[in-house]
Length: 403
Image 1 (cartoon, one colour):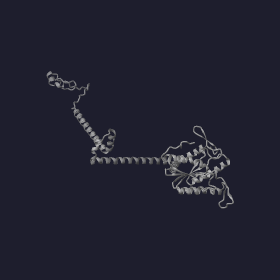
Image 2 (cartoon, helix red, strand yellow):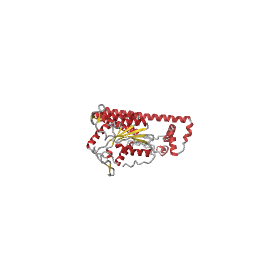
Image 3 (spheres, rainbow, N blue to C red):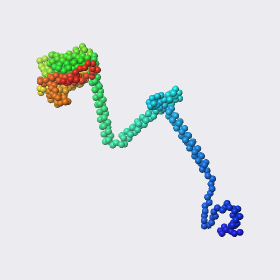
Image 4 (cartoon, one colour):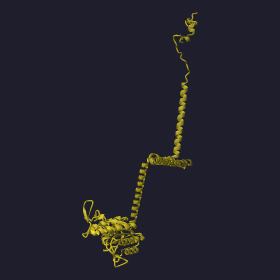
């Protein structure tokens, strides 16, 4: 039998033999010159893998859906009040959740939700506080140099001073507002010399006609605090306050009749020189007596200081009296009204006109350089009137006429 050239195996050349082993006709033959790789037939498992993946995806989807539903339910249970309120505000009708309000387990959810919300708020506040403390401590000890710390401390001190000043100003304004508040049962008392005689009637008319507030005007020409034998203002004021318990505010206007030497109470044969230490002590004591009497009767005192005068000597005397009176009245919790600016004085110099916003000049002083024109009287009267905190107006008045 013939054999293969290389393998020494029988060579199946016979047709019948070839037909018998026809399944090997396509099998490649390995020779030394040619290497042919035989493909391995492996059973495929792909259909099985697709089934498992599909099953796994469905399970994951069901799990996620169930988790979302449970989370949504718990959230709705805890935040039921917010959901109900939102529904009512949006659709203007009651939510279906209100039907569950009767159920104890549903009410419990609202309570737990409120507790959780409060806890979150407190936690956020604590976190903010701790964060602020940490930042402040870090800035204080590590960030800023010594000069920066000094500068920051100075800024903090300045800010605190400004805050205190603002508080004091607000308290003072409230105190003034209360002190000058008038009701229909209150009475306003006017006292002074000829300057007050000209001013008081305008204020009296406005208070009476517009608000039904009663007034008393005892102003008297040629009077002051120096010659008490001629007219004793401390005694007059005490008697008036005792007889009129409804007096709420007293307005004083004195000065031009006071700069004189006065008799010595201890020795009538000699006089005490104006502006001497003894004279000033006497004058201050009389102001203090008036202020003490007013305080005992819970009466607010508004004391007007005299304006600049035309004559230089009298003007210098008024400068001294203004300073003295302002100091003593302020020390005894009274209120000062300076009449100089409102009458047109500028820098301590006498001026008999005032210029309005439209540029118009209004004459405010009479030819003697002491008293006022009618326009000047009304300007001062309006400033007094505007200081009052009045009740609702009952009758129309003419306070808008400033001249």
